[in-house]
Length: 68
Image (cartoon, rainbow, N blue to C red; front, side):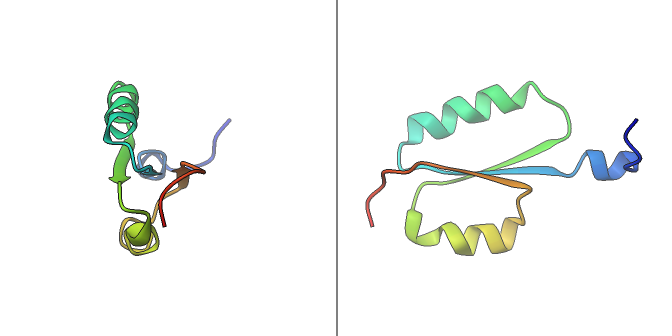
């Protein structure tokens, strides 16, 4: 059994860092069907750390081959 309070369960935060907008949209659509997940997409790899510091993700999904 999960001892986490209900509010904490709703605080799953997913950050995707990928230079392809099509991938960002695909992941957004997949996660849209799930409840309790906040999603943020960052297309510019040079802004990934800044975005992560602001969004405070639970998990970061990152494309391994990107410019810069």
